[in-house]
Structure formats: C-alpha cells, structure tokens
Image 1: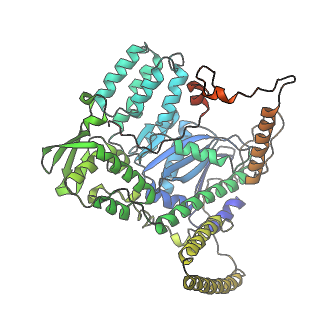
Image 2: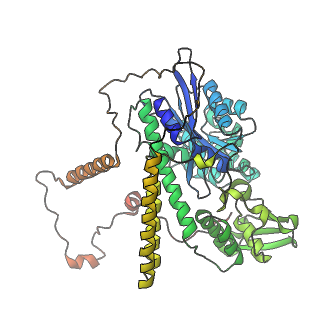
Image 3: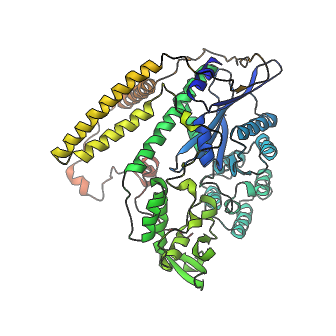
Length: 559
C-alpha cells in the first residue's frame, strides 16, 4: 500500500481496485495509470486481453489490456493480478476496468478460447464484439489433429490459406467442406466444434468488424515477453508493481521517440499522385507507409465502370496472374457526393484505411484528397488532441524517478540541432549561443525547484477502492527445489548471460574429437570440375539454416 501511495503522489490520475476474499486476502488487483487511461480514451476501440504471464511469488496470472496507437505501437491500457481465472473473476475485472475508463466499452476485444472469458465478456461487455485470436486457433488445430496437421499431408498449407486469405463467405464454406472431406476430418469432434464457432475466428466474418488491423493477441504476447526483462521470477507484490512501472516507462520512451520523429522527420514519397501528398499531411509515419504500400500495389489493378461516378469493379490485371479466369473482382462504391468510398474487400471496415481497390478508383476519377469520411482520427497525427473528461492531464506526469524517456528525447533533439547547424560557422555559433542561454535558464529554474521542494507535499485522498480495513497478501505458492533469486535483473545481467551462453556454444563447436583427421584441401582445378562433389549445401539444408530475410520486392497478390 505504501508503494501505491507513492505512485499516487506522482500520478494523480492513478486508479487502483482490489477485490478480496472472505479472509481479506487479495483475490484480484487492477490498476491503471493516468497514461493508461489517456491512451484508452484515444485508442481503446480495440483491446487484446491475455493472462499468460505468471512470474510472481504467488503464482498469480498477470492480465494485460493492450491496444495499438496511431504509430502502430502496442500501448498498455491496464494490468491486473488474478488469483483465479474463473468467470466470476473475469466478470469483476471487465466491469471494473470499464468503470475506471469512464464507462467506455471497447468496440472489439480479442482473447483466447477460454470459456470463462467468453461468459464474462457476454455479461460485462454486452455491446462489445468478442473474437478469438487467430494464432490460438492455428495452435489448437495442431494440438487436436496432429496426425493430420503435418507438412507431408498438405493440410497445414491448405488450412492456413483458408484462415489468412479467404474473405468471401461462400468461398470459405466451399473450401472448408472440400478440406475436411479431403483429409477425412469431417466427423472430428474438434473440427465440428471449430466450424460451429467460425464466426469467432474466420476472416469472412471479420470483414465488417473494426479490429485496427489486429486478428490475434500477439501484442499482448509480445508485452508479456518484454515483461520478463523487467520482472524477476518469484517476485513479491511490491517488486512486481515497481518493475511493471519501469516497463511502462520504457514503453513511454518508445512512444515519445516516435512522436518526436513524426513531428520532425520529413516524409518520403513513392509517387507523384496528389492523394499521397494529402495522406502525408494527415497520417503518422507508420500509417503513411501502409498507405503507400496499398497505393503502390494499386498500379497492378484495372477498373471496369458499372455506373460512372458511383460504382466500379476492380481486379488485378490479367498479366499479373497465372490463370486470368480465376481473378477476384471487388465492388467499389462512391457515396455521399464523393465523401465516402467503400470496397467489399472489407479493409476499411476492418482496419480503417483505404484499400488498393478504392485507391485505384480514386486515381481514375482524379481525386486530389482522401474523402473526409474515410479518415479515422485514431490513425492521424492529431489523434491525441483531446483528453478524457474528468482528468486533469496537467497532473498526468510520468514517474519522476524514471526520466529515461525525456533523456531520450533530449538526445534526439540535440542530434537534430547538430545536423541542422553543422553546414556553416554562423549556424554553429547561433546554436552554441542558444544552448548557453537555455542552460542558464535551466540552472535558474533548478534552484527555484529545490526551494519549492521544502514545502509540505499535498494531501492525497484515498484512491484504492477496497471494502475491508486490512488487505492481506495472497498466500504464497510453495515450489519444490531451490528458491529463485528475487533480485531484479538489470540489462547488464541479461547481456552477460547471453555472452556467456554464446561463448560456451562457440567452445563446444570448436572442440574436436580425439583422433579426428584434418580435412584435406581441395585442388583448385576441382572447383571448376563438374564431376567433382561440391561443398555447396543442398537446397533442403539452405532452407533450414538460412535466415528468412524478406525481399524488398513487393508481391502483387490476387486479392
């Protein structure tokens, strides 16, 4: 409680909710910082929720509410320690989370296939669309029909195509029937159940649901993975919370860096279309890259007008596909006097961005700007221009002891200043003079701040919502074997461990068995002799050991 009180002193918008059992022990603890609440206000339309991380002294699952911001970065909306993963516990957690967020329900929530979560979401978030994580679906298929799900059978390749590429309901139904009959799994209990719940995971049923481009809980999984670098195993409650705050600080540092680059780094253009200039003035750097990728790919498509100025059919050019008879046609409509363009591929409804089919029609009809109703504020440079009601954002400062993100920003700003002033002596002199004045002003402000710190700190009202006078920690889970260290590991610890492991593997690789003969060098002439055996690894070995480096060439797909 002392740690939470100190956190409240530094973040006036921090909210903590604790649910206790009959003995007064913590059953569930949820806390959201002012930054979490601010991010949820702007980007809380889509949330991924996962409870896989259990590194604490009480073996309590740690749940993370994660979303995506306007830079396509993962943002944390809140964290919770849970003693139980029951429907009642999830129901309390979801209701409490929404209450802390000014009763704003997410549009979509992505989770795994846990039945307890499904029931809790239906009860606590009745207006939210619940969908399953695509990655969990693929993993569970492998676990349930492993005898079929292998490389040699071809089931894996066909099933992945069905999950990732098919966007038409009729096409999905026909290909599913063909798949289960071909591999004799039409009567398999798991596959029957998966088909009955296809609206929870299949892409054709996702088209009209906004997911901000997310189809899995990968962002939550990634956040859980990053937490391991900050929180040691078997951490007591206070260490867990303190290290979690450092993790949030590192995320803020990454966001601040991208914000700085977005504001100061010039855009690069890939075409001469005026519509790209308009997109560059609206979208952030990361979103603009995705827009430019769709704009580039639209060059391989052809347009057939159905109703001039209102409706068009778009498909990839015949020369870009092997079988021109299997081309997919997309229906693009222009509505509201050109203020809204929609395509039945579903990309705008699902991601909130224009697809290549719509862009092709816009170029054909000489659009100079993106239609106003096709611009989602959450992807723009002004996405965070307002704040939640009832929050004093002037007090929403990050942890005063964790200033790494500000130092990071200062370092970037100084580098930019050096680049801008390094062209001539006059500019350098002006930069040095300006830095001197700024340094003097900061030193003066520092002396005034030290004087103000001698005043009494402000009184902070109770911010932890509990219903008992005494809160006890959960019972510790006893484990067999030697207890792990609870000392928080630094980045140097991880670097040293990695270097030690690498050196050990190198020594093992260099070690030769006794009596091994030195390999004989090949004659130079044999290098050009086709009858000689070459040392070039086989294609199978290349595929196994070569890194998967993506090609810079963009592939045009028939979508």
